[in-house]
Length: 333
Ligand code: 2P0
Image (tube, rainbow, N blue to C red):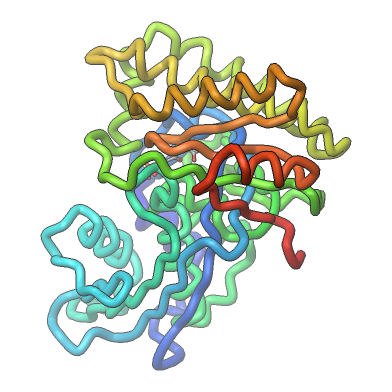
């Protein structure tokens, strides 16, 4: 099975031509509480484990799509045209290859991202999810949520989780074609839940998460423990979300993130996304928690931290971390 086979299975044959002049889509960024780290199929981005995320509501990507006036794809990110040689533009064109009405048709993609990219914050999740939503609008595919999630996954695994607000679970699935590997919104609200974005550095990372997860999977002796770790995290997160238990949610998410980073440190060659400041801030969080404040963190494939807490301690978080950006994921939902 290749990506084109999946597209042919999902998209109706009579919906291969654009149905409008422009298509639009918005997708929020998402932060995994149980991480996706390792694949059972690299072509289709099929994961080894389930994962569970929380979306960042109004932090995300808005994308418009139309026909390109040139004989190449155009990608305009935050008002700047991206060079077609960059990995970013190539990954987008690679996905667009699956949907061209004919080989001489090129797309113009205009995208606005209001989160710092390439710092382990945005990853590519909201970008590919917004692109699939814009394509769905442009071609009027009228696909269901499951199909949209599968198509977004072909662009980037974590994009499968970026189509909804709130808590989202991505089922790893077991089938070879990945038709059972898609994400779903969980039916729980937690209005007092907060995420704090603590930027340590916006510099581009040396090792992409794609490369990092492959290396961990292939070389870390700790990787064999990872699937069990995720299964335990998932169980704890489900209970925590149902009962609104921040201690359980925070401790499960924090341990899961540290276990993921442990597979990186024990890879060969070893690699690490932390900076000195990352560790200082982690020690500060632990110190605050030792004083009885329920504050936790998670960290992705980058040096930045995401604080996990509830609104009761927002004032403490603001006074301890001057530059923190606090997000209310259930703001209006
Ligand atoms: C996650 N990350 O669950 C984990 C935690 C990074 C650390 O999903 O190869 O960019 O495109 O499927 O989706 C980042 O991986 O990787 C990611 P591909 P992706 O959020």
